[in-house]
Each structure stands twice: as C-alpha cells, then as structure tokens.
Image 1 (cartoon, rainbow, N blue to C red):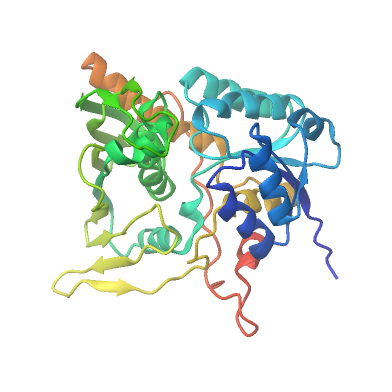
Image 2: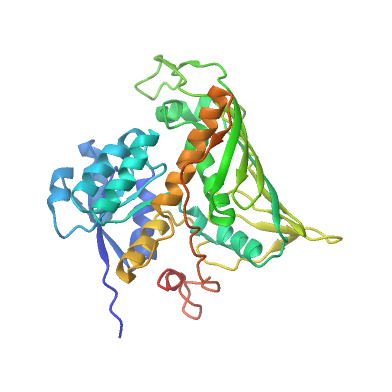
Length: 379
C-alpha cells in the first residue's frame, strides 16, 4: 500500500482569499496539510487560526520551523516579493497568489532564488487546472477546432467600486491586467504555449480618485491610479496564433467575459477563466454551437489546487504545472503590454516556458463510485 506523505504548509496572509484556500486544502486534498498561519494583523490571524485549527505563529518562527515544508503566500501583491524571497532563502517551497511580484526584475530574482536553493516556486492563477480550462485544453489538443489561428480576450470591471474595497487594485501591480487579466493570459498560455511579442495601446481614465466607502479607513482620502486602466493589445504566440486583448477596469460591475479561440476547423468559446467550472462551447462547420461535456474534475471553487498539484510533483520529483516559468512569462507579457503602450514599440518577450502537461482525463467525481479528483494530480 502506497503511503501519502503530506507536506505541511503555512498560510501567510489571512485576508478574504484565505478562507477558500484553507477550506480547499483541508477538504479536497490529502497531499497537503495546513498547519500554521501568520498575518501582521494579529486579530485576523488568531481568528483564522481558531476557525480552521491552525497554529498562529510569527513569520520568523514559521521560517525557522523545519516541520513546515511549504509557504502559501496570500498577501497583497506588493508584499509577494519579500514574503516569497524570505521563504526561498530559508529553503521552503512556495506557492504564491497571483502575480509573482510587482516589479519584473523582482520576479526574475525569485525564479533564480528558487533554482539556487533547489526548492519549488508555484504561482496562481491555478484555475487553468480546473474542469473548464482543462476541458478547453483537451478540445484544442485533440484537434477539434483544427489549427488555432486567432483568439479574443475581453474583460471589463468597475474599479471605481472594486479598488475602493481593495486599494491595491489602483496601485502598481494591481491593475486589471495583473489582477484578473492574468487568468485569461494564463489560460491561453496553458493552451497555446509561450508568446513571442506584443504591441499595445493604453489610456489612464480619471486617474484622481477619492475614497467613497464610509466603512473604510480611507474614506475621503485622495489617491492616484498608478497605471493605464484601459489597455488593448495584440499578442503573437510562438505557434503563430494571434490574439486580440481588451482590458477595461472603468466600465460597469456586470462583467461580460470573453475568451475565444478560432481555429481552421472550429471555434471554441471558453467562458470565464476566473472560475473553475466555465462551460466550453464548440462550434463546428454547419452545426449549432454545442456545450462540450467536462473531461476533467474540479468544477467547484478549488483555490489551492495548484499548491496541491505542486505538492504531488515534489513527492514524485516531476515538474509541477503552475510553474514559476509560465507564471513569469505571463507576468512579463502583461508588463510588455504596458511597456509597448508607453514606448510605442513592439515588445519582444525575453522569457519562455515549457507548456505544462495536461491533467489526466476522467477524474471528475469525488463520490464513492467515481474516480477521485485528486488522483488526476497524483500521476
């Protein structure tokens, strides 16, 4: 009988997103065990520790604890670099919330540190490992749309509302392309592979803001939007696919997500890659658009799926799928959009990555009679 040797993990950052991470890790996966947590807000840390049976610890104590194998970095983007760096320097594996850092050079430094210390660095978004995007990958890999030729990405939000709840969204590294656009670009990276170059146009709409929420300490405070909040781009992928990209954080709260791939023999409409259960629709010549059945599991909200898959990869000494190289490439691609919009020049991508292996098909059920979803991560 094969023993499952779980990795002990510490949660760093006990904010809103920590609930679904901890719940998923405790309920959905046998390979990873949350044991401790830290937040600079002591009350918030103690609340999550009591709620989920974790040990509240200082970050220094967590780093010095040899029984803790992995750091799960759920801090805000501005803190990602320092939190992850300290963990890597202490020879801890790290899975970080998106994105890898704020500054491009800092992202590269973290990748170099992980390699130098022979530890793993994984980065969200991990929704591409869920049922929706893995099924989309299956459709393309099986040639059901023929050769991918072009793609369309469109995402709208209202940061006059969102960023008044989470101010980091109007700060460097928190704009719509980084905060939510990364789900779209990671989905395409998983399916199409690395990008080659990008050209962009950007606009900063109403950069001067005033906090409007009376329930927040920044009510009435003035701030300035750090980056263009409307961005359009054209991306050329190494496989020849051309993608048109549209990000607008100054529209309305009602999102109309679009992520489509147009092939030589069909069209794939992928739904919202921010969700695990986005339905795929396949359009073939002279046929009605058809909802495609899910080929993979994890249709429910499974944040932390990437950390669990990385834990299995560590135990089996194989590459993990939410890799630092793919995450850095997507990070550079979004930076490249801003650089192109600023300079008026085409930005040539300097990084690349190996497209991760698709998960095994058929592991769609956690019920007694069905194959367990986690088994797809174990092989």
